[in-house]
Image (cartoon, rainbow, N blue to C red; front, top):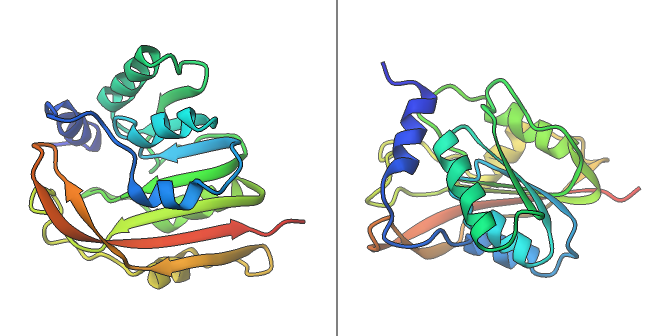
Length: 204
């Protein structure tokens, strides 16, 4: 029987032909923000975390896969970013990282296993400092190399409704579905849809 840990260790253990790169939705959302403390949920091999660190952010990264965590830790050391990037194994089904943050980044937090995403995103929103940003990016379509070919991809508004945050404390800044050209692990490309939800904790 395949467990969540085994599944994701296998995914991240597959050799890549390209280095991990930051997600375009992260770049377009975060570029205008002042650097601070960031939490990267489902960090994978760390393209987002490494990019954030290079922009001056201190990043706590979390992934269920020990393989992904080890690869990110090694990459941070290779690029001289050990002081700015820490990676830990967390199964978000049972365990959410502690701390408060100026940014929580959650890209493609899809899984074939049980995960209460609404609960995870509520915890993420509650971990934001006043004025902090929660960036949720979901697949809106499946790339040819994706494991989730038959998945249902909720719209940004559906995700926001599931999280059900108090509008007196959090505001929805963006909820749309842009397209982009994605690059797979083998270097091939495809046009895909992203579902983008940006939530901000209101300043006090």
